Length: 338
Ligand code: DAH
Image 1 (cartoon, rainbow, N blue to C red):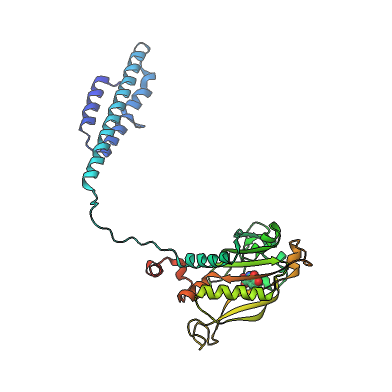
Image 2 (spheres, rainbow, N blue to C red):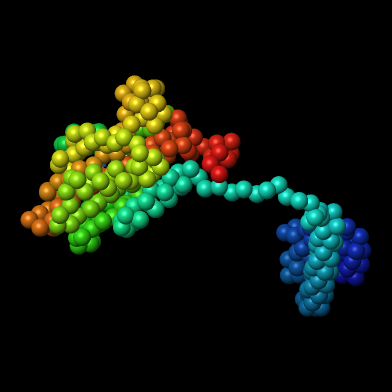
């Protein structure tokens, strides 16, 4: 049996003398913890002779409340003391002038905004498709059937979910737009794309901007004009542009677009690998099968499409020679794009 009066005195004394929170927690454990004096005393009540049990039990319970209250009061006192100590020590001199805080937009963000701005000024609207895409939209409906070699051209990240993948290009956004909107259509679809690719000019994740125009009269000249105007506005000069016959399953005819090397101005250098030209995007007239896959009447409508790599354009515009630099967030790099 424990003597409530004695214990109370001792606890009061100890709590009074505690001068930090650590010590206070030790005291709390000593009395109220699992093996604490009060806890054990409460457990022992059942062994007290019947005639004393009630009286003793109520004394211990009162004692418990008293100690709890004392601990609580002391705790808030100590906490307050700690706060005022901190306030008096860690003060801030508001009169010291700050180094200028300069936040900047990431070069890729700057490039993307510029691309969007140019196309919006030409009457395009902006559509965003998902990065987790249906295999059917990424390939099949774009006229790339299962055994088509073009599926291997883009090393795909397949997902465990059947029928889904990480989109390998923004072209499936074309399908989503055509399935949900009626012509005339004039959209760009910017976003992240994923491929199993990793070297100084390729990253497993990068950005593309897709373009799609569908109406009753869209033709190759409209496409050429649109792309040339975009490129000259983007590079802020009269860059030479050429369209080179190429192949994409979802366009016919297809072309790749080159600009005169902006590093060597066509003389031939490391960046253009001596050719004087730099490839910047793919394009073409939307393949009739793709229009039909989206229930668009090919007797009435035709369209053109294009797709460009944002990192590539950004690297050429800013003169960046390694794609990794975009993703490392090294301040020495980022600070150059004020
Ligand atoms: N999707 C192609 C790629 O990722 C780029 C492309 C080519 C997009 C031609 C187009 C196009 O819209 O018409 O390589």
